[in-house]
Structures are given as C-alpha cells and as structure tokens.
Image (tube, rainbow, N blue to C red; front, side):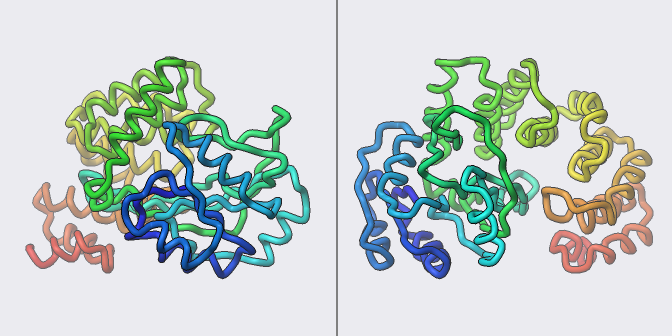
Length: 342
C-alpha cells in the first residue's frame, strides 16, 4: 500500500486486511497527518518514499520491501468486505505467472447522486515476475515483457475514494489531471490515458471537458472488447447527459453492435431516449433491463429502470401507473420520496 494523508480511512482498511495477510507493507509518500502513526500500530514495515510524480516508482519501491513473493495491492480508501481464503490459495498455488483480479465496488458521486459500480481489477500477483509501469493509473506488466493470463479471485473490496465528500476533502482530482496531462504530452494518442483523463474530469463534474477527452479517445483505433473501452463508451454517454447534450447522446446508438447484451448499455440508452422525449421507446428499453443480468452499476436491472418508468408515467400524467412503479422500487430512497410527495 502506498499512502499520503490517509488518517481518516487507513485504520479501517488495515483492520480488515490484517486478518488475511502475512505482512503489511506501507509506503508513505509525504504525509503531514497521523497516517504513519496509524500504520505503525499495524506493522513495523512503514517506509518513506520521496514523491516524484510517478505512481509506478512508488508501487515498485513497495514491492521491493515485501518478503513474500505473492502480493495483494490495496489503497488506503479500500476496505475488504469478502475474502475467500480457500479460493485465494487455489489461485496462487495453481500458476505463479497469473495475475488475480479482485472485485472492486466503487462508490461514486455524480449529478444523479451516489452509485455503487462494480468492476474487476488486477491486484494479486507474484512480485518476482511482475512490476508496475506508468506514472499514473499504473499497469501491472510482466518483467520479461511477455503476455500473461488473469483470473478472477474471490476477494471483494469497497472503495470510497470518489465520493463527493472525499473529492472535496482531498486534492486527488487536481493531482491526477496534472499527471495525466503530463503522460499525454509524451503520447497524445494514448487512448487509455485519454479515457482516464476524461473519467477524472467526469468525477470533478467538468462534464464538457470530459466529453472533449472522450471524443478524442473514441477517434482513435479501439478494441471494443476491452473492459475499459466499454466503460469509456458508457461514461461518455453519461457525460453527454450531464452536460445537457441530449441530442448528441443519441450517437451512442452506434455502439449497440458491441454492447447489445449489456444491461448497463441498455439502461444508458433508455436514459438517453427518455431525455430526448422518446418516452414509449424509453419505457420499452427500461423494461428490457428489469430482471436482466446484473450490470456494473447497482440497480440497473431492478429499481433504477422501475424508478425511471415511474418518472415517465408521472410526467405524462398517469398517476396510478407512476405510483405502481414507484412502489416496485421498494426501499429506493428517491422512489420513497416521490411517493410521499404525490
């Protein structure tokens, strides 16, 4: 773990992870609060690293301090909520050259409120064979340059770093934008870095800047089977909606051939139809989301499409139908609020 000024979250994270690991390595990059003091209550292996605007350098320094071959990399604002020890051991005993992908639940704030988004990220690997590259949004690469396989690991982590409260309390958005722009100066056609810059602007609610960067990325050759490209397309759609560019958002229809089976994509297209006043089409699209396979964003196959169907019915004056669909949302706070008001 590399840290800086994480006194508000570090204890909770280390409390959980300490149950499952043989040692904890904490590398501090210049804290001025109680971060190091808290870390020292969990481990003696707390090291200082002079920050040099390079996340990979700090990550690789932390890997050098480990005495175990297999490492699990976490951030201070990530808390383990599930750890299947048996499955974990099966993975690391089966093949030392694989990288384990844990399940990360991001708690994200945007203009529509707080969402829980799920993704798989590479965090478990053998440090003898792998290291990090990239000054920001660093990637795990094999030291010999060869390709490698990834496997899902039954470890779930909840990340709170992109809630509006945390963003307002830290300078991580401004820091990340600076580092991403530096990386893009060296390679202006790096689609992944453009995606990360766009997503960072999105987190900062700078939706027009996000749209501009997403467009730049989408103009480059892309592999639409990659997870980050799917996220790029979907977040681009939400950036267009949040910037009020509803008509322009209809261009997302062009990506249906890649993502027709995705609940997240279908839900996004329903929102776009709804914001363009195509209410019948939107209701049909929302209906297809209900009871479909679970999406990356929590609720896209259950209470969220039901809520939006209710909103459409209410806007059209069909009060009874609106109430019926608000009630189908069960304990969704926005639906309960509308039921009280109407």
